[in-house]
Length: 273
Length: 250
Image 1 (cartoon, rainbow over the protein chains, first blue to last red):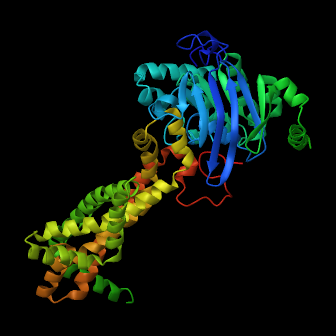
Image 2 (cartoon, chains in turn blue, purple; image 1 turned 180 degrees about the vertical axis):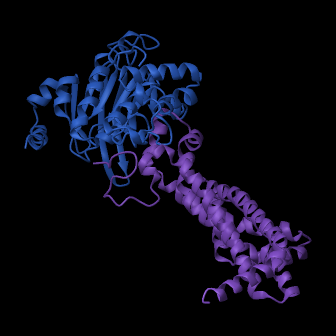
Image 3 (tube, each protein chain N blue to C red; image 1 turned 90 degrees about the vertical axis):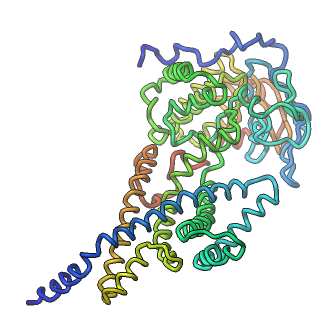
């Protein structure tokens, strides 16, 4: 409403500044031999991967293959059972010293069910984190939040409650809520799976824009076309292990392993028929 | 001719009881005061009990569990007698009003603890997770995200508890608290008109519970502003699945 057209403002600092130049060669996130067990069930078996700054990594696989668990281990929503996680040169796991909360201010997460806080307006949802977790003064945080909302075209919904928004709008607010914390890494956990098909596009568009601006993103998704077009690299996880890991253009168009081919056939076949 | 008879009965009833209205009102005032005090202190006890129940330390959890078990399993009247008649044997002499309020608060606290616990359980796990993912501490999550939502959810059962407590206040007449029922008893002893006065007393209780229900209803409406049309509903939605804010997970 204040003369800001969607697409004008940047959503994140991306490549241009990150509080200390991120060396594009040094990995932002390194996972070594990560294991996760729920009781007797081994959900993640010896996962190793590394993510460079501004890299967009798509994670695909069947339900129950461990994709969400992998994401949730990174920001310690789940406690790993073994292995190492290193983020921005600091040990995330195993680590007894650092507080989880501090780590999470640098990693943003968007959930399948949006998880907006229903008793607060859209604007309040976005400013809550910056004000109470980061201690940013209210005026400053509110101005920044208004800019973010304007840049995704949801200014007029600023004072509305989440119940008034469509699913796509809610999810975009959820993304902006995470971005308001200026994270170095964004985790997307099947963020379009709960949306009506016609609303999926607007969310994917926002994510593509974010990728363009250089945000480092890990995206667990079933949207193969999105993974192919927007992500740099794709990982196919099957039963807790990484089956394939390579450039998205290769993996998703001509995969090397048979399991990957089977999976893609199933997913793409379902969406066509 | 037909309506004359009931009319005379009502007029007789009114003229008998009307001179004692100020006394009945005084008794009602005491009953309401007891109820409000009980709900306030009972909520404090209940909150503490719930906090203890979610503690990491087993002994702390055990104490809270014992409290709820013992209080819910024993009659209120017996607890009133323990506190008013029993404690003096240990040297603790509490005046009737204090003893009564204390007994009621302890009693109600256990029920309120379970109400709050139910309310906490009803908040979707995703609310905790999104707060954690933003970097909020447990305390911040509770303060800003969870408890505000719990308040709205527990209003109907708390209204219930309010009304139950009001109707429990007559038990305090056994220890000499001049609430509405004891007041009515005393009036009856001097006027020898139990029928008229107990019925009038019942109407006084009805007026108080109706008022309470109305006030709580306003509170409920105020808390449901955020939830739009879905929130203004008074009953659970009949349409399949998709109530609430977010669409059902796939």
